[in-house]
Image (cartoon, rainbow over all chains, first blue to last red):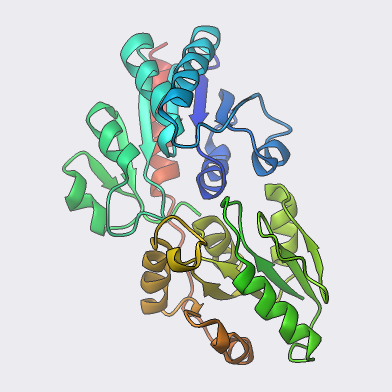
Length: 153
Length: 162
């Protein structure tokens, strides 16, 4: 069977901690991580193929560099699937992957979102092939496509 | 051992660190304490501390702890619960410039209602929470494999089509 390329896009902190839980089912695939460069991501991802980018810090111009780095990673990796765990910095690579490269899009809403949807979730929901929420309150806030999956950690 | 975790959020959480440091200094805590201080500028005087570590080292520290006192970040809180540690949660608050909003209150409220954690909103109540932690019998966390199972099946199906 051909190994499939799977990209995992996540912000640092809890988003990465949730993403790492997914590794249990990804050992038959070629994976790479796309996240922000901080000590936690550097130390946690030493054994994996990873792209660590500079923190855009809510600056609209720094977001341009996120878009450029996303395109460059997509051109190099051409993932069949991108799994996004939020937040904002993961949106460009996930959306561009889906729209320009035909990657399947799996989104996991962070468990920090208990009662209200996140901005990245709202942006990526319409484009997702699989969309998970971890708290039951969010299922009706998103719609029929949202799957209540319980806590990943 | 008691582990104090402030996570990777880019603001300080001096309020928690100072409170624990003072308790240790006044002999209010008899166990060994280790503090993960993150971006805080308060440097503990009475306990071991470090700023950040990786995921597997964090798991080891959690496994060695009898009580975990953590900010309300879901990584720290849920890992602690997954490892069945007694978990005290002090949510970061916007008014103290510990976070950009008060969303940590959501997870603290939900998990308190489910009787899985001990919340501390007023830091002066931390000592009481630590004393109560010893006899606290939390409801167990039900781990769900739905996300892993459905993703696994989706990927297998996709791979067969290649």
